[in-house]
Amino acid sequence: METSSLIGPPRLTRFEKARIVGARALQIALGAPVLITPPPNITRPTEIAMLEFEKGILPITIRRKLPDGTYAYISLQTLLKLEKEAKKRKRI
Image (tube, rainbow, N blue to C red; front, top):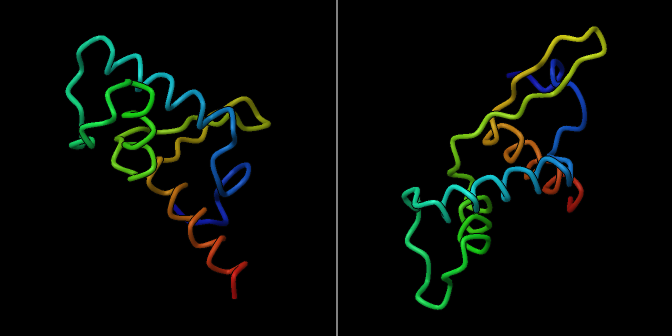
């Protein structure tokens, strides 16, 4: 997806991040397979979900509502990549 066609901020909002991590933590708590090998000291589902989120390996799509009532679907990996690029540009 091109950046110019992106609706909303080119990053995850705090609400989207909370929703993703919370939903994934619930899945893990209910017995879903973990997508990473967590360190031995991390056992809580929320901590594991946060590690998966930070590594960007969750196969999740964000749905953002457009002004005309339709929806735009953006992959989590795309938003994380755009956020990382924006942080790099700020450092330079």
